[in-house]
Image 1: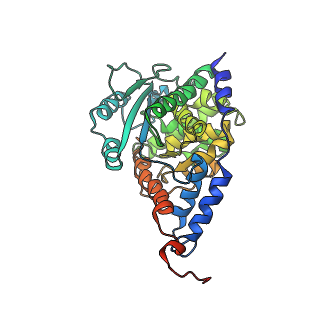
Image 2: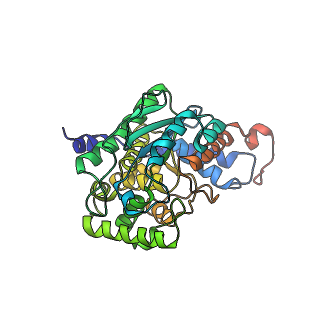
Image 3: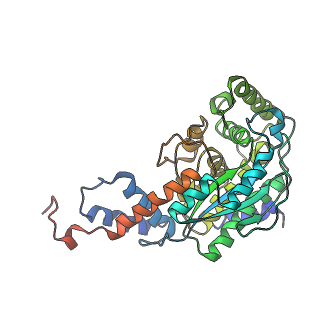
Amino acid sequence: MTYEEQLRTQISSIQPPDAGQMQIARQRQDSLTKPQGSLGRLEELSISVAGMTGSLKPSLASKAIIVMAGDHGVAAEGVSAFPQAVTVQMVLNFLAGGAGINVLARHVGARVVIVDAGVAADFEPADDLRIRKIGYGTGNIAVGPAMTREQAAQAILSGIEVVAEERAKGLDMVATGDMGIANTTPSSAIVAAITGRAAADVTGRGTGIDEAAWANKARVIDRALEVNQPDKSDALDVLAKVGGFEIGGLAGVVLGAAIHRIPVIIDGFISTAGALIATELCPLAHNYVIAAHRSVEVGHQAALDRIGARPLLDLGLRLGEGTGAALAMSIVEASVKILNEMATFESAGVSNRED
């Protein structure tokens, strides 16, 4: 069986959320000691999580942030302010516990799992490192495809597999993160290809490039779309033509979460590009996606709109790594605690407006 056939089989197992549990959660929210709807998105979140998990009282104690790492041939086009070597260096920083994501993961009580999906170097074995290398960086999308179609399917399957492995250890909620110098360029190319938006409208400054470098980046993305002609109706083709190994892995994490009915919190622009691939492959998967925050990357909102996801936070973040998703984990957890720990009008002996 080819990787693509395996992927199609996995996707076919994804089911819609549990409508019955959502209705029970909605009724309970309306009976709690507050005006109906007064806790806004917290109420909506708790109802969604009940549907995702099929439980009114899901445990969200076991949390993991899966950070996919990969390199990109398009870095040779001068689209990033940092050299490609930083990808390796930052993976080592993650493993040493010194990065922003490590700090915020500790803050919310989540474990960090680093996946080498396609870094242009090898790593020594480490407890928190999973080697799922599809290649030593993608091809330069400015001159040809990022990868083959089978590699694209393999990358997505690797994300699905990592979720399954983490679930076996205990996984109630998962978040996505990324690391890969130049990866905002393929992410913008993916968003432009799928949404039909002009490259300049979905291309941001990534690591902080200046005006001239931004103009070059937009031209590179235009060239990548012209050279590769990705088929917007075929998300696997889009990933293969202009994507990244770690972006495919992120798509797999979203699909793996949906397969196992686990809420998946997506981080910023790169994670959302991965989620966009996942939800184009399987529209049902969007029911399991929670958007953590709105990135300052200009293409992020276009991707969120396409998925149909509203971000919980807007903090001006653009680091990636899963940092925004880590912060959002506590909000999701709080929403479920409100649903289950808050008293009802009846249990508290409080009169509601109908009394």
